[in-house]
Image (cartoon, rainbow over all chains, first blue to last red; front, side, top):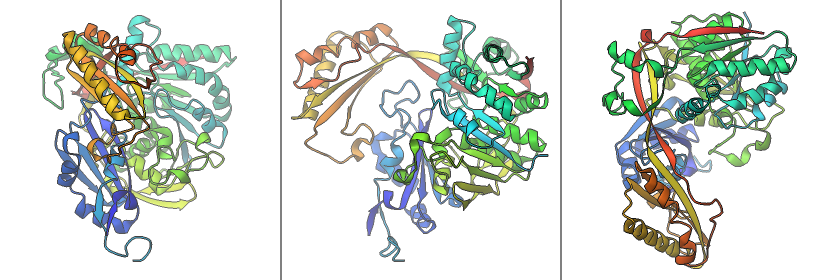
Length: 112
Length: 453
């Protein structure tokens, strides 16, 4: 079944200059392999489209059931230069959580 | 040696919750209160203040806070460590000593860390072969040299440890890393050597968790914000450190907030790059080695953190003037709120163009529609209201100022049912850009000055 990432993940995003980072964290250990397989750097780059001008990098933190994405040139210049309302990318984690992911039947709501 | 040391976060940035430090001091046992004030933009604001008045250039909030904090911290033997000294730690310590005197405090040792400010040494350093080129783009410093406003090396925990060894009850620094503030008391209390990389990494990770205050204990908590008790009285995080490098993240029981695996993980992932190379002046920490266990209510134990040797360089952050921006908003109501806002934007751009004004960028966003998530936001037709937010940026201050005069006229000469122009004309503000560089550690000497009352 298809669900929004919000169902199986949480996260936090922030800035380093013109680069945004999104930490994507699985809510349960069993969901980590799913996001590790499905939420690739390429997919995130394609998903954000024109919102991210530079490349997207991905790092894995299986110990925290988490992925860290770096979105380069994503904040309109960053810092005090950016004209964006969300110049620090604080809402980008929520934007990623809108993405849909395939989850095997029965894996959600305790029907494992 | 103490069996454990409790280090409490008091402020996560300049402008944070002002009641938090006193809540940490008065609601349970702590040994250290650490307060992080500095972001890159903060340093340039402070430098600007110092240029106008040489007695300023630090977090003045800190002096107000000290009036409350000092009597109780002295009574309970709680030491305070902060980088709120900004670009003028000596003036900051003067003000704090003055406050202490006015409170009738007779004995107080304040340690001041100096030497991070290299603004006056840039030309000498370059002559000695330190290029200070942009570490991200490789550009030479000459391209911005005449616009540099501030220049500071990031010190680590070392200088603070020295101050603590000399008996400082309060340590005031300039540009010290956020993580160094938390690591220093662990090194001092447990006698950790400067090459015990795993322990230094553990203390550094604890510092990363504490450096944003309430963001580790239930603030800005995405996993389940509804479940967080009493955010109005949120307890900032506390690191309970042990000599072997294990650390328990917790908070005072009587305060609000929440410390769980999820609150700690969200903060661990905040503003990091490559998790295996979290580089500080003290060590390189590997976030992929962190083990977390929830061992009780509001208690998360962290073990297993691995570290590697520190690099030979300090990071230097310089700020330089890079033009001007201004922002203005207008609110359009139903019916056809978005269509009217878009028409207003079109009219505004024609008028700016007729005036011949040059901007690097004019950006219009529609708050309530898609300003945060762009094309990822679903289409919703019938908006009750839409806020049009226009920002401009230019090297030409007059162009930016003129833009500020073009917004209000739209109310009577544009689409109808528009409001929300209460703040007056948008004013230009300076764009401060950053020049990150590296410098050999031996080129920047720190100094610890003790002031005794």
